[in-house]
Length: 392
Image (cartoon, rainbow, N blue to C red; front, side, top):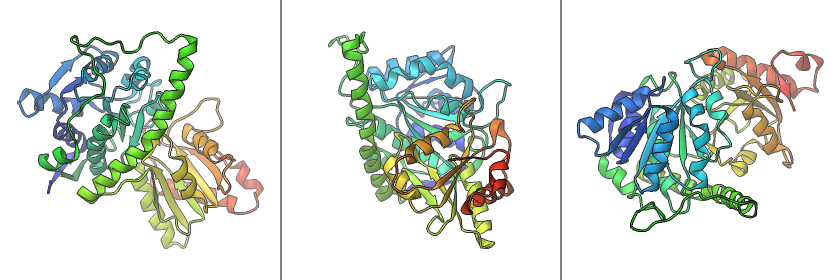
């Protein structure tokens, strides 16, 4: 079995890419993901990873080079954050449309302005409709596991979609945690060599991404969306295989102490673990509080989500991104839409918290749960007057 080590999460992620035997890394440094690609450059330079390391002049070039590499049949990795992810925006749509299975880690960081190098989820929420599979990690072990899994998911011939693994910048990327790194033999047994169905080859010329006239474009996008939604079956199969091999289970929607909960918090990323501490504390006080978080964000796990919240009276959705002029945060908006015509649904209360790296403490989670608990009553006037709360 693998070895247990204490490592910075970014370094462990780079080690996971090495274990996956990535063949091309196209990279540009940006805080707080830089340690990932720095360590990968060391692994390539030292001969520990047999890969082509492409140094580019921007994140736009990094994702462009990555697509070119994977189109030729090379297992390809990149990583970015914040404004770097925003600079990739134009190209991000092309990867899923051409079914190019790049794997990317995004160390989530606030978007400017004002300039912020600290963590929130505004960067990835701005890219939620680009068509990439998106996964969320809460800790270093999950980040390592999900990166290795991402290659197998993305490269499966029934998938062939690019995949993002989200990790919180600094609060996860730069912390040192005990992590179990699998042996190379174990990863090789889990992750087969990449064998694309189609690839660019001068000996067998083909065209990828030609002009789509109106009579073609609509049908192409519909086919892409159907194929994207169908990836869920492969994702579940990969997670089942991982659990059998390594003993760690992953599910599209994961819950904590929700069996008899009256108020359930929903938050993605590393702060879900802080929220668990708050849940434990409130349980000791006799408050029936639980926690839900998404492991799979895209494609949206509608079936699992509705089942998870079907018996919950109040759901407090905590967004770490803002939708200016909208009806709440992007996570809250998505949840409301998912529950709109559900037979059984909770009342949804949406909080915006932690923007620009603002700390969210155990006490803050307690306060949000207490505020949400007002809706267990018959809509008292004070519940509507509470600043920062929107409900549906």
